[in-house]
Structure formats: structure tokens, C-alpha cells
Amino acid sequence: MATPSRDAVGQHFDHALMQHAREKSWAALHGIRERMHPGISEDEAKLEAAEVFRELGFERLWHPVLIRIGANTIRTYRQRSDPNVRLGENDSYFIDLGLVFDGHEGDVGDTFVVGHAPQRQACADAARALFGEVADAWRMQGLSGQALYAFAGQRADAMGWRFNHAIKGHRVSDFPHAIHKGGDLGDLEASPSSGLWILEIQIAHPTEPFGAFHEDLLTDTHMR
Image (cartoon, rainbow, N blue to C red):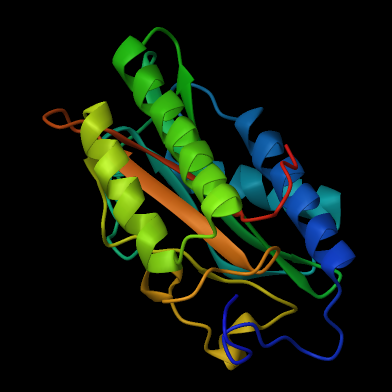
């Protein structure tokens, strides 16, 4: 298991509340998905997201809302989007949310397709499948964070997708997790503990300008 310093939490931490934050965050993500439509921009989608968050009674954001459309789906977290991109009739986008509910942090992300875009759908499906493979490898083999991301990169290559090695996952906790300085999952030399670490997967088409993203909390049982 991870060292105590990597697993540090606050005095109000509760695993049940972590799961609640996770469930509410997924509800928020799908609430945003329902409001996405061809022609919408990322900034317009974020305004819709704010309405969804208020309806669900969130406390705050712990990281900015990230909605990437079209060619912006290959950009990393810290790269700025092209603001002129709008969702096409046959297109894809992903949503990445960091929300706080009851003092605990949720962090979820997924990719969706509108219209008829088979290659983009295959990419979105591959990101989810790769997440599942990596999470299962952790559950069954107890792999370290470093080994998990090495495995993820190998599997992405075998599946024919470019793997974003800059995305390495991270800790979550009762807010704010940053004070515990858990570091990146991809740098963790130990096996991550259940209910504390976010596994992030970002892949891209080898030649075309689109990608997919999926993230969720690593738990020792399948929760979705």
C-alpha cells in the first residue's frame, strides 16, 4: 500500500462522503452532457455547467471546469483551448470536473460523441476500455502507480492510440487535498489505496486531430 504520507487525509475525511462526492460529480457530468448540442462553444457549455452545479447543490470547484470540443480534445489540462471551436454535427467532446460536495472532492471525466462519427466514437470507447483494463490490473495485481501508467501506455499502443504520458493521475481527499502533497499517481512507487487516487487516461488518434479522456476514482470494487 502507499506510504502514510501519500495517503494522508484531514480529520473530517469519510470514505462514504468521498463516494457521495463521486456520485454527485457523475450526475453533474451527465447533466452537462444533456445540455450539449451542435453549435455550442466551450464557454457556453461552461455556463450551462454552472447551472447544473447549482441545481445539484455543489459547494465549490476545486479545479476549473474543463470542456474540450473537437480538435481541443487532444490538448492537455494546462494547454489553452482554441476559443473559436464549436461542437460540430458529427463531433466529440469531453468533460472534466473537479467538484466539492460535503467537504469531499469528486473528480470525473468522460468523452461523448454527437451525430455520426465512428472514429471518434471508437476513440471514446477505447479511453473507457483502457481505463477499465488499468483499473482491473490494479485490483488484481496490486500494481504501483508507476507500473499502472507503464501498462496503460503499452496497452494504448497495442490498441493503436497515442497515449498522453503527461497525464498521470493524482490524489483526492477531503478538501483541499493539495495540503497533503500526495503527488502524481504515475510517480507513485507503491500500490495506490482504494478511494483516494484518481486514474486519468487521455489518448488521441495517431494522425487525426481528436482524442478522448476518461477519469474516475480507483476503488477496490466496480462502482459504475
